[in-house]
Length: 243
Length: 231
Image (cartoon, rainbow over all chains, first blue to last red; front, side, top):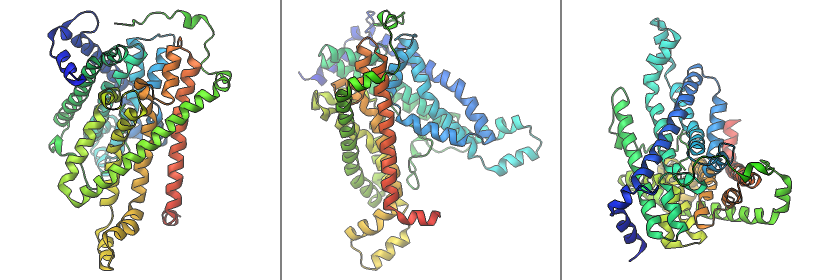
């Protein structure tokens, strides 16, 4: 029996899903999702207002671009490890903070670019109609920037869900635990079972968020699965690095 | 969970500086060995990725219907977390750098194919038609028309792919070939030795910066006409 069929046998055993010794798939999945969601929520709560303000006022463009470029070069493994050796100590708290820091650049960059891309005429027209600066931001710019804001949130969430896997290497929890444990015990069936779970979770997250951001974006919509632009579709400046 | 967030014991008792020159000078050969591995893995991964991405981009330009599936497939690979991808490749490559190399090359495809294709489709049709009218064959067309015109997009893609690959290489620690990532995890396992962790982390960021500037410089040198129009 090879490692892949061993992995399928492992995944097919209900006991491995519900066991309560800390290695149950469901409890690890719950932990994985909880860490990821809190990290993205914290990152969004801090970064969205900043991106909103910088994009609205047009300030700090150089800072945003520099941050997005530098963040690409910082390995998440380094972030996770560094937060784990602060006095916070390793565990879910350090993991969540590291992932929140990691989730900030894509949210900030996309929000900023989204607001900067709003047609100045639209902004002017809104002001001429008597909207206050606050109303211009929330009722004219925000709906137009919404697709990119959602892209930032989606990118950040998918990256965080994918990256939370690495926490297992530095004493954190989540589904990466199975990969690390399987490798450590030379139980490669278990390791591959963990890898399959993590890969499926990341792909499902991407899929769910694509549909969700399509549903939340106002205005005429295209099918979310037709958004691969071929012409001029170079890696957008606002894209960031998974993992 | 396995490891709860509790107070650390020995780590806080002994002096544990965030950075220490004596660590760097005392462990020079080790650091250089891991740095060398990091450089090799990155360079080969991007080269292999580019060697695969270029034919794919040419195929996608020639047969437009292949573009969406190719981009979609590379995006799906990219979405798979690196630790999972290396674990899935382990039965193929075992405890060798090959496992890491295959994974990194596969990851680089998403950026490279997209940018190569964008560069190729950005070439004005008139130019290619003129070249064809002058009797250019397929190979000559590629070398002396496509390549120079698409070069800025190619260079941009190579820069992003290389910087990303430098960061991703660290996850190779799973199979013991993570380059500078070995220092990061090694420091963590050596009783949370901060100086080693920070040296590995800083090394990654600096390496990415050096690669980025290097490729940008080569790109600049290869496209003297771009500077003329900018001036």
